[in-house]
Length: 375
Image 1 (cartoon, rainbow, N blue to C red):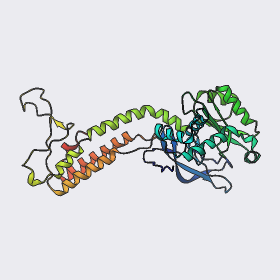
Image 2: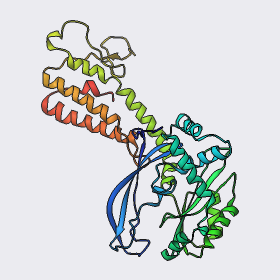
Image 3: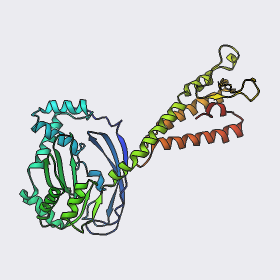
Image 4: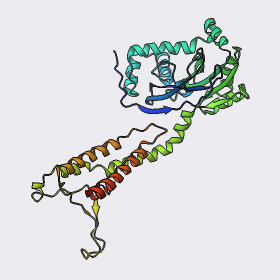
């Protein structure tokens, strides 16, 4: 079964490239182009944008931010967590590829075909079953490179299942170690790093997330070697609290702007019909309190505002366009976790209101203050 991929619901994220020195020739790098990749994971889809930098030397490779490929193999649209789940359910639960594919599509909304499941199971077997020591050609290429930067990552798709651990060289993309286990400690991580050190190639740096056993294992096996924590994981964890508040702000904006259709109905009303029929009332969020003493009853509750028909076709078209503009603003996707869509939408709505007040109300005499004062 062939699956047509739909990237419309993918979360967008931008990863900056801060490397100004080429890791191969140590010369200066400059911006080359901007690229992107789509990544399916068990936690949803990601549309990752990133900058590519390169130096002036022809023999050096273009440099891509390490975080782009930390949780997926190069040129793959599927994360290591998907590969790990396929391996676990095939070897431990003895499921067929069709059953695994159905579970991925139904339980995790991963767009994947049964044939791709079979191919990724082959990738899983290669990762856990063929160390680089058994491939002289790959090992010789690494030694010619002269140094390696090790990335360490694990994917545990199920809480009670095995985790797939992968140690890779970020300069060449080669998988140095791959294994699957139920649990591991800092000492076990240190043993795997020692196996990489046994290749006889200098390790110039390590990249991983801030998992405690990894940090301790690196410190034990590679004292003094620079260890960079994944910037994307750091920003994602840091943004969790901000994201919760941002979602609340989005919901509040949506609530206040829910009555836009009411304004459009008022704009569609003909001037000839202004006195006939029932008046169109503003949304429930749009209310006013009568002046003090107007009714003689203290504490009288606010009343909903009646909307007036536009004075001309130009005003009617303007109201419709403003409603469309605010709807578009409320759908601002943002670029999580670096940009909060709710805060962006709020700022843009404020800009729209400012333009309406300054350009339309003051200069053209069109009063929209009643219609949009509650947003």
